[in-house]
Length: 477
Ligand code: DOR
Ligand code: ZN
Image 1: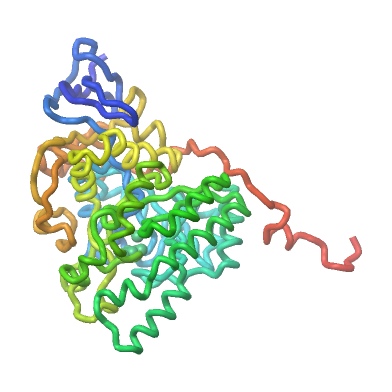
Image 2 (image 1 turned 120 degrees about the vertical axis):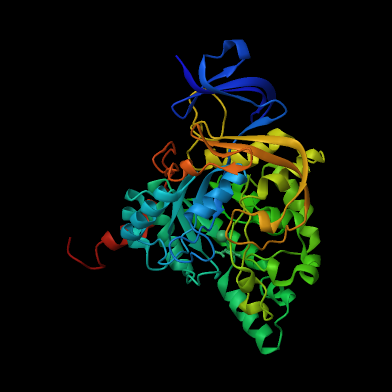
């Protein structure tokens, strides 16, 4: 057999080891991993001398704004940014216009994404107070999972009541899909923001004051209780505080199917940075006090936090630099800087390259049932590969971002580690730091890779559906 591409002289990275090997690719899949002389003939070869061969990162938390906000991002610019960051699969959030809340809107987003994407993707469906009835059609229409906003953020999607959340979890549990949570309790934040505004506060630190860590602790704890009761699978997005690690670890210990992610901003920024960066680092949940950083890092290392994502949330410089903090849009781009930022810590000896691959690729793939099609370099897997120079020292620069959003807290930051080529199912999306335009539209939805076992449904006899079927008291049956 003649392979399409053989990558020679690289060092392959897996979840527990690294080893020198060649990698053969055919029809978008990995055909063989082994010694150079064991490789089949190939139409094309690539010399990866000096490079590490990583499974492409899977960023389960991006906002590509399409449809709805083309001045901030669209599927073309967002997935080009992913390719430059060594990211080969992204999961896109539903706070677009209109929100991804029914089958028709989902189908329209699938059409847009499949026509423009450089990398593979999953689409989240919105799980809100009034979208529970749409769960079956969203599952049939091909969502990767559901997003539930326990707290308000960009897009102003109302947070569901605890009553609606319980019912939503009951309905999603038997589908096996995971519910990803923006775990910040809205009523606490609204009240505090109103009081701070009335007291005349509009400085950057007022944003943090409105959203103390207790909002995350309360939300994670409550969601874990509802997940335990129903059997629903949940995922805690953007873990920002040491305090919320306690309910997360406790729920894991009780056997709740709960996972968590953190993002570079919570590992590398702190409240000390508001003076320097102001509204640029306004995001939800907020960047918190420095003492949160080490516990979050340690939780990644010990597995309490399962993965690294970015919450890539592009906005324009004008939207990020307004004087009144309450009018600054929340978030900043991250999909193309995550890998260099994290590899810098690997270079500094804080983690191994295998740790990084576990956090960026293996665990996300396992959590959403994509493994071993994605997240690993082995025969039969999709050829989603980031070829990375772990020794390259350079500086992140906003002006160089592929993202339409050219404003981030990372401008000028020195990093060590650079993705040189990115392959998506065997095709170069980025080669020698150049975009490969012909790959636009090659990205496909990964919802069809369904290896998730069904969730263990609990208390099925007490769900809303079950009690509505019960006979009325005194009824003749
Ligand atoms: O800061 C944020 N920005 N947090 C979110 O949860 C949403 C995001 C956005 O869509 O801009
Ligand atoms: Zn987000």
